[in-house]
Length: 281
Image (tube, rainbow, N blue to C red; front, side):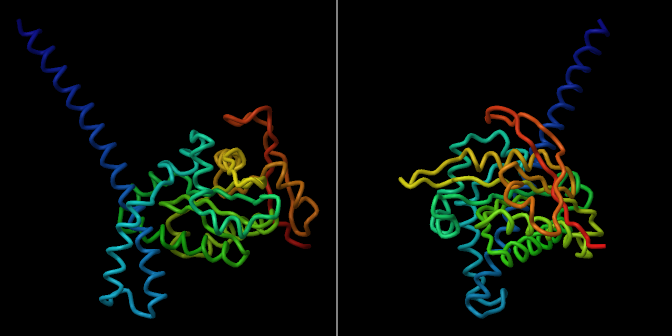
């Protein structure tokens, strides 16, 4: 009966291999989550230190670090998987991102509740994390976040959510959002760390109402922005028809139709446009 023994042994080996793969996948997911939390803690530590006028190593900053870690665990609700994960989120989930930052978004929105929404994330971030290792990947995330914050802040934007390599940002008008997106793409290679790490980002924007006069919040336009971003390729800025209509005549900008496609959960077909900076002759 040697064949029975061999068959049993084969089953054991296969089962062990499957279990190993599952454990490895779980480990990678957990490690990615830890890195995301570390990046968020770093941002909160910096804010706390700046506000207190102290170095991050001071006793007060160490206390702030503990509070920051608790806050990150409590409030880190951006769905895993960056923009790709947001494509499958329900409208209610996406609308919740808006309600969690209600005061700032109401300040930015126009009187009819319209804002411009930007989503971005790093392309192939999991593979890049594996290639660089956790320590260098965390440094890359910090450098990436620095670029996002600087370019968003200089154009009156507001970061609603940032976790890991993904960001959700709102702007008071479409042109400010588009110019920020293009500036981000232009500035990323200027960072030596990001250039050596071969980091590439995709960005999508949509303009629409997220607030109603009755105080209700809509997830549909937030979802539209996430789905536009999910269609973008590396180093690309994609915009919806609504954004294009607002910026098509702006100087030094060019738009090209790249796709007419269905977007999950949104009726009909939608034109997606690539926007680029025009360099004067």
